[in-house]
Length: 339
Image (spheres, rainbow, N blue to C red):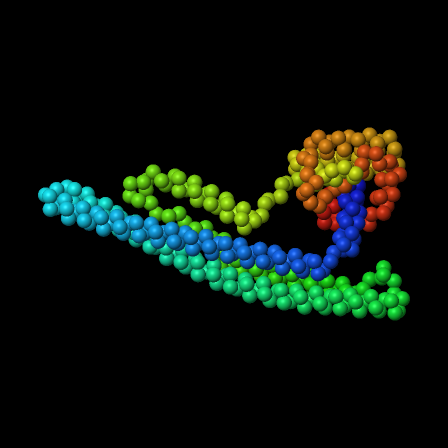
């Protein structure tokens, strides 16, 4: 097993232990409830947007009806003046307005159906949020009572605080499972009811229909981009392994540099096993320089798990050996062993 992967295992174990001690189940439940409320507000905003689009279509339909009536009157006036050509032009435009009106009414009906689906989704999500809130308060009360009972029991029996409380671990695991199930159910409901569907563009008049087609396509793409940003579309994680240099930063090494990184890792491991201080120092400096030069530094604000951990440039051979010996061994063919 490679040096950097064993160091990564040690660091991951330490971080997991720190997170377990810092975790507060009551705060986790409150956070899950707030996220569900945010999802509910997003659905309600979508309902308002659909309703606005529907009203806009109704206004456009009313304008078309007025224009159609005007064209009918103009056709009658043209015939009265003996201008059959003008009457034919007015009737042609009235017929085109009729087609546009039919298209608007079809889109308005689709928006009405979409609005009804969103309202039903909002009602179901509201019920789930209320049920989760009740469950959350119940679990928090049970947890507080269990915590108080545990403290009293430890005080009476003299049990050390460092001993594991099995019943408390089970309660915490159940709370986490319930929270994740509620969140997954809410997301599935939004997807199944079509909340994330796009709304089509409005109809155009007969004069601008051909000229407005490219602009309409561009508007659809822009609305799709904004909608993805609002619903939080997941971003793809860049390719490549993440390497942490102890005491410094994390770097993402591209797949094309993977072979060179593996070669340096093997040389560094061989130097450690041979207790060769000079080779270890030279190889460590070369590896750190390679990672800094070829890798992409990951900002401190981004939290990502390290695939490999590299000793710091000032770590001696003995210090590196002590860290390696403290790491748990894994079988040679264990999953993830690429060093």
